[in-house]
Image 1 (cartoon, rainbow over the protein chains, first blue to last red):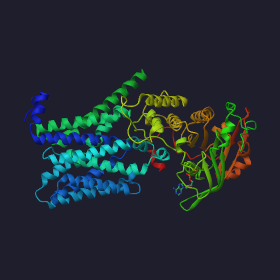
Image 2: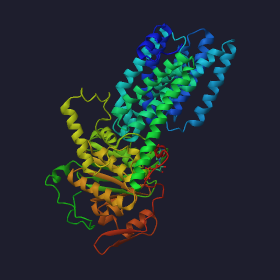
Image 3: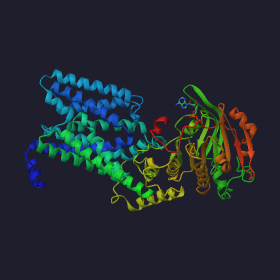
Image 4: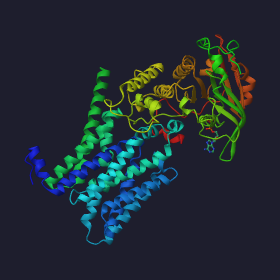
Length: 288
Length: 308
Ligand SMILES: Nc1ncnc2c1ncn2[C@@H]1O[C@H](COP(=O)(O)OP(=O)(O)O)[C@@H](O)[C@H]1O
Ligand SMILES: [Mg+2]
């Protein structure tokens, strides 16, 4: 498979395979959901919680496969359950990283359980790679529908709570005094984040969810501090990384998780370097 | 209580302008009224028997050593903590009822240096942050309403003198700049009562007097009642209508000339304190225990964590 370097022809080529069409559909849905949730997650400094939720998805998916259920249900069940558990911890919903010891412990145990399930299900090693590092193969139409329905529901809830959630995220004390239900919003947000982590896991794999959850938001927020721009920009960057990753992965037969992560990382690195260069330029001019 | 404009014993940098004529009318509905109030937290009575009245448009300082329960009193006024005894009314109603008319600035709040949200966005959250939904894209929002909101935000940012840096990310601003924007956030809905919990806490001396003067000016020009928690009374001494001290589980309230005496302060703080008069007639409190040095003007790490 070699690209013709004619974009239209290449896309037609890519989309002539139903599995590729499904991969693009799934990738698009996931990039939008993960971008929107990731934008809030980065503002709330809950990246560690997001990563934990994704890691818990791995034993979920492996366990579902072991039981003969579609892995996608395992991801959602375990990620959302983990979100509720973290929210129930006395300090969990607030974020700010105090929970690191507990969640770190849980992360390690979740990975170990996933590995056990994989081992119990003999001859399943490529499946483990897919779960940990992502793949564009084998996205079923049912899976796309499930991803779409859950993403649409999660985004609808996010639209409903968006502004108070932003208030509670950056200014919880004042928001609470204004009658914003800060604690309840934290719980709802963790559940939404669980959905996003479960979806992102199915594209980038459990261990590379940050490619879609953190990197686009971090890049967009480095580019602009205006939320009216940085939130849409996050989604655009996530979509670009996903599409580029899918295309390159298809033509090189390389690992999808690697390419999506690399494109997302490339965007972030260029943004930060450009920021540094501008800062250096300003300093130099200031000194002159 | 009455306003003792003529009896003001404490001179200020600039004498406050004459009271607006309707001040007497507004006074009838005191902004805050506490009678025999008590609070228990974790099985311990923080304070009890507290009487406090804040008249409309008054600037009242809430002073006292660390742990005396000043922040607790502010949370009671917001309806976030219940009284265990006594009576309370805030803006003529149960506390918490009128919080849309209360501007609140919590203690020791500064933003993570990496937080990428502009100052103007933080101020805007004070205006509409509690409304469900998300802001509509500009071309869909009702034009008149959007204009009114933007004008009000620009106006209040101008009032606190933050126009020059309001569009910068708030985490990149100095403590004084952040504090001004937070005061703008508290003011943006034209509150009748401002509750400021140690707003001078993390500021250097010039910023302390500048922010104190700003709050006093706003108190007069916007006719808003102000309760300011302070550790050091000197920066605000010239502007105060009333002083309330919390110490030893109780409170002493009065006009500055009644309360700010060496004898009263020494008793309240359990340490010798002198009140001196400078050559230009201002009072200076000497020997007041210093607030522990816990902040610099610029912040690193995640200072939000230590307030929860
Ligand atoms: N949630 C709580 N549970 C138990 N005790 C508390 C709580 N919050 C504050 N306290 C105690 O109440 C006292 C008053 O606290 P605070 O109002 O913060 O004092 P101040 O603001 O005057 O420094 C302190 O002794 C503090 O330890
Ligand atoms: Mg306090």
